[in-house]
Length: 157
Image 1 (spheres, helix red, strand yellow):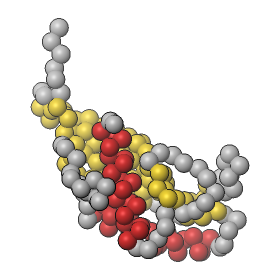
Image 2 (tube, rainbow, N blue to C red; image 1 turned 60 degrees about the horizontal axis):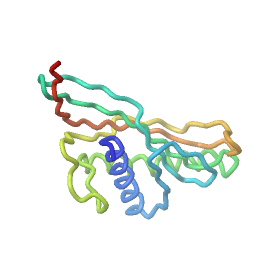
Image 3 (cartoon, rainbow, N blue to C red; image 1 turned 90 degrees about the vertical axis):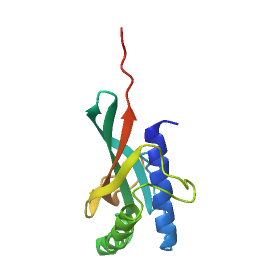
């Protein structure tokens, strides 16, 4: 498993535990996912920024997008979906704010070289168009960054 895959798996575990602790049943996927049963979340890598710290070490900042589908546009009223986002957003904030090392029952130890994981932003209610036979959906998005140190071995030719 790559470092990115490991981070996403840990994020999924933290998100799943946070919603379960809040009494909310939520499917959480470690990849972009589309279906017509809500609520559910998808997680994926959306950015990568390396910064040289020394000749043999880089600080890598990864950006992840989390898409949280709260329901179908055809089901209920928009105000009901907005109310769900008002419930889900603090759960997401607390999940990452209280657990920057992404430790969970599934992953009880910190990932090597991980410096920090932060939920840096979120969006309000967004309407997504119908796609692949799935009706239009209501969603919100969160951006999470993770920083880790990576050792670099210099190639000498």
